[in-house]
Length: 80
Image (tube, rainbow, N blue to C red; front, side, top):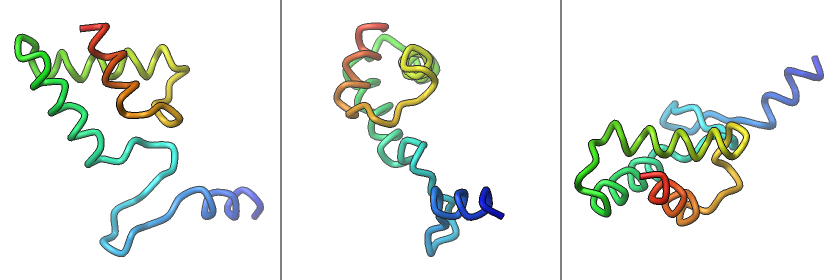
C-alpha cells in the first residue's frame, strides 16, 4: 500500500492522458534539445545526436533530470 502511495505522488497523468514522470526529460524539451543539437552539428545524423544525449545520461548515472538543458546540450556537443 505504501509503495502504491509513493508511486502516485511521484508521477501523474496529465488531462490529455499522457503519463508525466518527474524523472524523465519533458518530451517537448527533449525534441527541442535534439533539434538544437542537429542545427548546431549539421554533420551528425539524428541518431548520432541522440546517442550523444544518451551518453550524457550514462555519464550522469543514468538520468538527465537535475541537469539544465543548456548543460545537457553542452555536454552532448562536447561528445559530438
